[in-house]
Image (cartoon, rainbow, N blue to C red; front, side, top):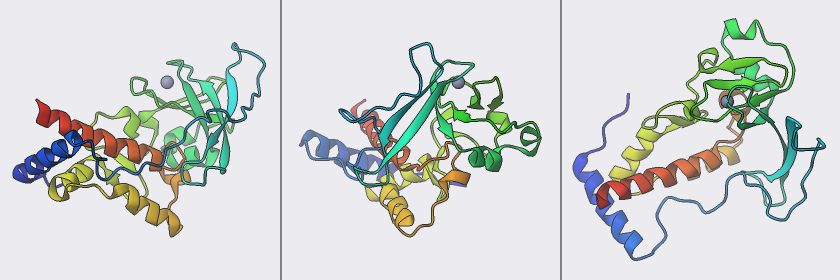
Length: 219
Ligand SMILES: [Zn+2]
C-alpha cells in the first residue's frame, strides 16, 4: 500500500520546481548519466546481411558501467507488433514465467517486446510467444502509468517516487539504486522481466514524473 502525497506539499514543491525551471537551473534528482544508448560513432556489429533479416546486433554502452564498457545487444522483430525487441537471457524467462507457461518453453533465443500496446512480453523467431499473463510479475512497460514498479530489485515505483517528490522536492531513487548496485545487491537478470539493469528506465521515469508535475502546475 502506498500513502498519498500530501496535496499541500506537492503543490508547494511543484511551484518551487517550476520556478527553478524558469530560472533555467538543472532540475533536481536527475542524474545526467545516459541510459543504454546506441553509440554515435562507435562500431556496429551486424550478424545479418540485410534489412529483411529478422535478427541484428549492435554495440551499446552499458548503463551502469563505464563509457568504455560495451555490451552487444541482439534484437529481433516481435512476431505480433513488429517492434524490435532486445534479446533476453533464457534464465530471466525461466525465473519469471508462470509454471504453466514454463512447461511449454522451448529453450531457444528469447526477445523482450517493450511496446506498451503489445501484450507480448517474450517471443522467439520461431513463433513462441509469452504474454503478460504468462509472467509472474506485472511488466511495467505494459501497465498504465501511475504506480508501476520500475526497479524490481528494490521496489522503486512511480507512486513512491511521486510521493518523495512531493514531500522532499527531490527523488533519490536513482542514487539509491546506484548504491545498491555498488554494494552488489542487484539481481536484474532474475527479477526484471527485461533482464537488464533498470537504471536507465529509472532515470527516465524520474524525469517523466518531474515533467508531469511541472505540466500540472502550468495548467
Ligand atoms: Zn510486440
